[in-house]
Image (cartoon, rainbow, N blue to C red):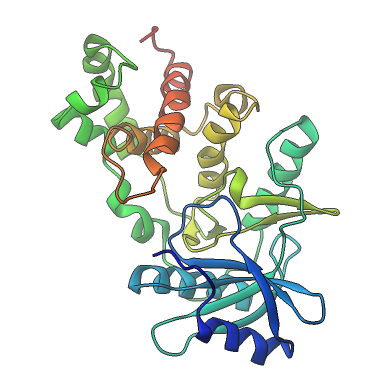
Length: 292
């Protein structure tokens, strides 16, 4: 749902909680969420980032995010300014990060900062109310079995041969089904450049609606394909040990990237295709396979 200006309810909430009237607003760039998002300028010169639900799905996402922002205090989080969860339209007000440095480009120092931040996230005491990784991503598992049942979608992308796929599928399926999602660590579960910001000496991670409890290596493995096509190191140069997670995510891309976009204006399939293009050679290096 597109809005020409913030809703009256959102503007009133900002005025009441920030004790200053909103006087200007603009839409932020980037991101894949359908939620209503604005960077709002207040009469006293401050700016805030506002995110409001537009339907039941985005309402659920905002409630999930609020578990992190209301229970965790960390430099890798945007500062929470206000949260409302009354009625059907949750609203989240956060520190405005629009003047921060959003990658790409990448360099060795920036990559290390994100690596250190992932360690900090995994070491954070767990907030209450988060789902397990199995609960959060159960529907995304089994990608390589879906490819086995209907390989034409993947083959139609022209990224691998039918012979190669037939030979490697049993290996990929076994590795995916042995994947260990269990654990007791905080996982952001959506690490990529448009969710990362460098501001001062902080590395800030945004969009916590998929946060869960489980194997913290998911954040690293999930980030590496997008890092690669944005000029960072190749995934296989960083990690080939997590065979289960690499198989799980590559199977998800392989069983999704060829599908139509889920809604008008969506570009999620384009992102998945890029990730798949990086993930297939990663699988090759991880399993010591011949060229596909």
